[in-house]
Length: 181
Image (tube, rainbow, N blue to C red; front, side, top):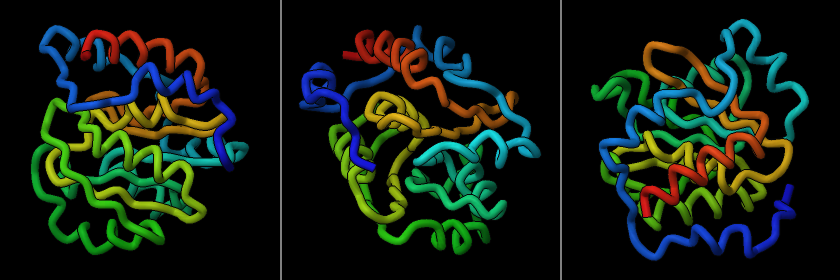
Protein backbone atom coordinates (compact mmCIF):
# COMPACT_ATOMS: atom_id res chain seq x y z
CA UNK A 1 0.00 0.00 0.00
CA UNK A 2 1.32 3.45 -0.88
CA UNK A 3 1.52 5.97 1.94
CA UNK A 4 -0.82 8.93 1.76
CA UNK A 5 1.13 11.26 4.06
CA UNK A 6 1.94 14.68 2.74
CA UNK A 7 5.41 15.21 1.34
CA UNK A 8 5.97 18.16 3.69
CA UNK A 9 5.67 15.73 6.59
CA UNK A 10 8.86 13.97 5.49
CA UNK A 11 10.73 17.05 4.26
CA UNK A 12 11.12 18.12 7.88
CA UNK A 13 13.33 15.08 8.46
CA UNK A 14 14.94 14.70 5.08
CA UNK A 15 18.44 13.63 6.02
CA UNK A 16 21.23 15.35 4.20
CA UNK A 17 23.86 13.58 6.28
CA UNK A 18 24.05 11.06 9.08
CA UNK A 19 22.72 12.01 12.51
CA UNK A 20 24.06 10.54 15.72
CA UNK A 21 22.40 9.65 19.00
CA UNK A 22 23.67 11.81 21.87
CA UNK A 23 24.48 9.86 25.04
CA UNK A 24 21.75 11.67 27.00
CA UNK A 25 19.08 10.24 24.65
CA UNK A 26 20.03 6.60 25.11
CA UNK A 27 17.92 6.21 28.24
CA UNK A 28 14.95 7.78 26.46
CA UNK A 29 15.07 5.07 23.79
CA UNK A 30 15.00 2.32 26.41
CA UNK A 31 11.29 3.08 26.84
CA UNK A 32 9.08 1.16 24.39
CA UNK A 33 7.57 3.15 21.52
CA UNK A 34 4.61 0.78 21.50
CA UNK A 35 3.10 -2.11 23.40
CA UNK A 36 5.22 -4.96 24.80
CA UNK A 37 3.59 -8.11 23.44
CA UNK A 38 4.03 -11.72 24.49
CA UNK A 39 5.18 -13.87 21.54
CA UNK A 40 2.13 -16.10 22.04
CA UNK A 41 -0.18 -13.17 21.24
CA UNK A 42 1.86 -11.73 18.38
CA UNK A 43 -0.18 -13.29 15.56
CA UNK A 44 -3.42 -11.92 17.01
CA UNK A 45 -1.86 -8.48 17.52
CA UNK A 46 -0.68 -8.32 13.90
CA UNK A 47 -3.77 -9.89 12.29
CA UNK A 48 -5.42 -6.66 11.12
CA UNK A 49 -2.42 -4.67 9.84
CA UNK A 50 -1.54 -4.19 6.19
CA UNK A 51 2.25 -3.98 6.57
CA UNK A 52 4.60 -5.55 9.09
CA UNK A 53 8.12 -4.22 9.65
CA UNK A 54 10.63 -6.02 11.86
CA UNK A 55 13.81 -4.46 13.15
CA UNK A 56 16.48 -6.81 14.43
CA UNK A 57 17.70 -10.28 13.55
CA UNK A 58 16.07 -12.26 16.34
CA UNK A 59 12.80 -10.37 16.03
CA UNK A 60 12.70 -10.88 12.24
CA UNK A 61 13.59 -14.56 12.55
CA UNK A 62 11.02 -15.15 15.30
CA UNK A 63 8.26 -13.65 13.15
CA UNK A 64 9.37 -15.61 10.08
CA UNK A 65 9.47 -18.89 11.98
CA UNK A 66 5.94 -18.21 13.31
CA UNK A 67 4.77 -18.01 9.71
CA UNK A 68 4.65 -14.20 9.63
CA UNK A 69 6.97 -12.90 6.91
CA UNK A 70 7.56 -9.20 7.48
CA UNK A 71 7.04 -6.86 4.53
CA UNK A 72 10.29 -5.21 5.61
CA UNK A 73 12.93 -6.89 7.77
CA UNK A 74 15.98 -4.92 8.88
CA UNK A 75 18.92 -7.03 10.01
CA UNK A 76 22.65 -6.73 10.67
CA UNK A 77 23.42 -10.43 11.30
CA UNK A 78 24.18 -9.72 14.94
CA UNK A 79 22.28 -10.49 18.14
CA UNK A 80 23.38 -8.90 21.42
CA UNK A 81 26.59 -7.68 19.74
CA UNK A 82 27.52 -11.23 18.62
CA UNK A 83 27.34 -12.86 15.20
CA UNK A 84 24.12 -14.77 14.48
CA UNK A 85 26.11 -17.84 13.40
CA UNK A 86 23.95 -20.63 11.99
CA UNK A 87 20.85 -18.41 12.05
CA UNK A 88 22.26 -16.40 9.12
CA UNK A 89 21.00 -18.84 6.47
CA UNK A 90 17.47 -18.78 7.93
CA UNK A 91 17.48 -14.96 8.16
CA UNK A 92 18.54 -14.76 4.51
CA UNK A 93 15.32 -16.55 3.52
CA UNK A 94 13.30 -13.54 4.66
CA UNK A 95 12.22 -11.19 1.88
CA UNK A 96 12.08 -11.35 -1.89
CA UNK A 97 14.61 -8.59 -2.49
CA UNK A 98 17.56 -7.18 -0.58
CA UNK A 99 18.82 -3.66 -0.02
CA UNK A 100 22.34 -3.35 1.41
CA UNK A 101 23.29 -0.29 3.44
CA UNK A 102 26.07 0.93 5.68
CA UNK A 103 25.04 2.37 9.02
CA UNK A 104 27.45 2.76 11.96
CA UNK A 105 26.38 2.15 15.58
CA UNK A 106 24.50 5.02 17.20
CA UNK A 107 23.75 6.69 13.87
CA UNK A 108 21.00 6.99 11.28
CA UNK A 109 22.58 7.47 7.87
CA UNK A 110 20.86 9.01 4.89
CA UNK A 111 21.44 5.65 3.17
CA UNK A 112 19.46 3.79 5.85
CA UNK A 113 16.67 6.39 5.84
CA UNK A 114 16.33 6.15 2.05
CA UNK A 115 16.40 2.34 2.15
CA UNK A 116 13.46 2.33 4.57
CA UNK A 117 11.61 4.80 2.35
CA UNK A 118 12.29 2.65 -0.73
CA UNK A 119 11.24 -0.54 1.06
CA UNK A 120 7.90 0.99 2.09
CA UNK A 121 7.11 1.73 -1.55
CA UNK A 122 8.25 -1.68 -2.85
CA UNK A 123 5.68 -4.09 -4.20
CA UNK A 124 7.47 -7.10 -2.70
CA UNK A 125 8.88 -8.10 0.67
CA UNK A 126 12.27 -6.50 1.37
CA UNK A 127 15.18 -7.40 3.64
CA UNK A 128 17.45 -4.49 4.45
CA UNK A 129 20.90 -5.80 5.37
CA UNK A 130 22.86 -3.33 7.42
CA UNK A 131 26.63 -3.38 7.52
CA UNK A 132 27.18 -1.84 10.94
CA UNK A 133 24.20 -1.62 13.26
CA UNK A 134 20.44 -1.51 12.76
CA UNK A 135 19.41 -0.55 16.29
CA UNK A 136 18.18 2.97 15.44
CA UNK A 137 16.35 1.83 12.29
CA UNK A 138 13.13 1.77 14.29
CA UNK A 139 13.08 5.58 14.21
CA UNK A 140 12.84 6.00 10.42
CA UNK A 141 10.53 2.96 10.27
CA UNK A 142 8.07 4.67 12.62
CA UNK A 143 8.44 8.11 11.06
CA UNK A 144 7.94 6.91 7.47
CA UNK A 145 5.29 4.27 8.21
CA UNK A 146 2.12 4.32 6.15
CA UNK A 147 -1.20 3.94 7.94
CA UNK A 148 -2.04 0.47 9.24
CA UNK A 149 1.60 -0.57 9.61
CA UNK A 150 3.02 -2.45 12.59
CA UNK A 151 6.67 -2.05 13.53
CA UNK A 152 8.02 -4.88 15.66
CA UNK A 153 11.37 -4.70 17.43
CA UNK A 154 13.07 -6.28 20.40
CA UNK A 155 13.96 -4.33 23.50
CA UNK A 156 16.69 -6.09 25.49
CA UNK A 157 15.49 -7.26 28.88
CA UNK A 158 11.89 -6.26 28.08
CA UNK A 159 10.69 -8.27 25.06
CA UNK A 160 9.03 -7.64 21.72
CA UNK A 161 7.56 -4.21 21.17
CA UNK A 162 4.79 -3.68 18.63
CA UNK A 163 4.14 -0.13 17.45
CA UNK A 164 0.54 0.12 16.19
CA UNK A 165 -0.38 3.66 17.21
CA UNK A 166 1.78 5.45 14.70
CA UNK A 167 0.61 8.95 15.72
CA UNK A 168 1.62 8.50 19.35
CA UNK A 169 4.93 6.85 18.40
CA UNK A 170 5.69 9.51 15.78
CA UNK A 171 5.46 12.22 18.46
CA UNK A 172 8.16 10.42 20.49
CA UNK A 173 10.26 9.77 17.39
CA UNK A 174 9.97 13.41 16.32
CA UNK A 175 11.28 14.54 19.71
CA UNK A 176 14.28 12.22 19.40
CA UNK A 177 15.01 13.15 15.77
CA UNK A 178 14.94 16.87 16.61
CA UNK A 179 17.49 16.30 19.35
CA UNK A 180 19.66 14.23 17.01
CA UNK A 181 19.89 16.92 14.32
